[in-house]
Each structure stands twice: as structure tokens, then as C-alpha cells.
Amino acid sequence: MGAWDVDTFDNDTAGDWACELQGVTDAAALQETFNMVLDIGDEYLDSDEACMGLAACEVIARLKGNWGKRDAYTENVDKWVEAHPQTPSAELVAAALRVIDRVTREPSELLELWSEAEPGDWLAAVADLRKRVEE
Image (cartoon, rainbow, N blue to C red; front, side):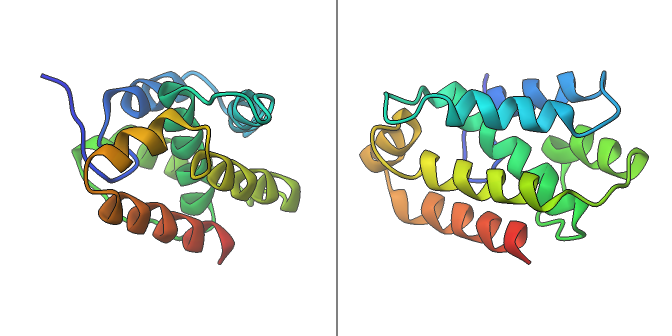
């Protein structure tokens, strides 16, 4: 049974991305993930890419000390952040904010999926993530 809820790591794609993060030691993987989302431009953004992009944004928030929800789903990312403390560059933070903006505008499959359900809770969770990335 897969996970699916409003928080960033409450889906299997973000969880898988977090597991892959364990094999890297710097923020280059975050930039690669941001580039994957941002290089889509105005084309249709697949939900898997959107989920991975938001997961990378969550790492930025945590690196800045703005942890958000911590549970079994966030454990891999939490351990990575604790093992690799660093201050994200202004460029990386700006890229994270652009990713959040891109995921929450059309055409975005993740936005569509949440619009078919109750988008308010998901949009609130993404707004919280954006705030934690900005702070």
C-alpha cells in the first residue's frame, strides 16, 4: 500500500527520492532535482517530478533549521540533514522557491490531482513549506 497525503513526504515518490539522497554528501543532488523541474518550463509537469522537487525544497528548509513535520516518512531526509549540515546558497534557495511556484501552477499533474480532491489542505502544506524555505 502506498502513502498519499498532503505533506511533502506523504507519498512514495518523495520517499524514494529521500532514500536516494543517502548516497550523496552535498547539495548538488538538490540542484539536479530543481533543474529537472525547472527545465520543464511551461510544459506539463509530471507528478513524480513535482513530488521530488518538493522533497528537495524540504531539504532546503531543514538545512535552514526550519524542520516542519518529523516522522517515519521524513526519517531519511532528517538523518541526511543532520549528517551534512550546511547553509544553502542564496541561489539554491531561489531555485527552491521557483520549484514551489512551478509545482503549484498549471500545467502540473500534482496540482491537478489535488484539485480533484480537496486542494486546500495540500495548498496549505505547500504554503508552509514555502514559508520555511524563505525564512
